[in-house]
Every structure is written in C-alpha cells, then in structure tokens.
Image 1 (cartoon, rainbow, N blue to C red):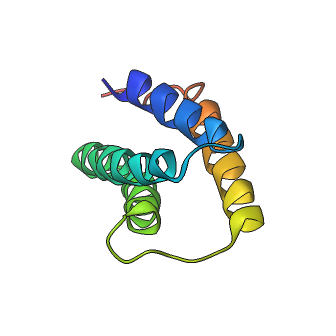
Image 2: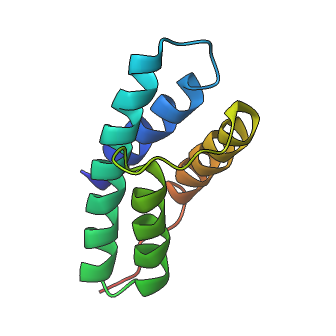
Length: 97
C-alpha cells in the first residue's frame, strides 16, 4: 500500500505543475494530507522516526484547512522537490526486520 500511495502522490504533485483548475489543487491538498498522514503513521509504526516526522510535516504543509500561502512559483518548487523525494524513496531498500 505504501509504494502505490507514494506513486500516486508524486503523480498528483507533478500534475500540479500544469495549469489546472483551482479545484484540482484543493483535491491534492486533501489527498496529500491524508496520504502523508498515513505514511507518517506507517513510518512511526516501523520505528522510522525521521521519515515519520518528515511525512507529518508534509501532511501539515498540504492540509487544506489553514492554507499556507507561498505563491505559485514556490508551490511549484515544493511540488517538484516533494514529488522527486517520493520517487527516490521508492528505491530505498526497506530495513530488515
């Protein structure tokens, strides 16, 4: 469940670089908040605190209730950095139990 979620989130963030209707960005905020919160939960459950805190901060950044106003250019950079980070995290080997 974790790998497909990361792929979906990365794809949604990369699509944000296109000129989309405002409703799409709202949808990305809701899906992003829920997805990053789930990834944070999974990370903390696996005792991966650093990843858990990163995903928790991303869930707070993308949450739609108290919007973080950064401007389109900065949001585009955030989307690319977070999307690339998600894609790169797919190539990390999971820790052995």
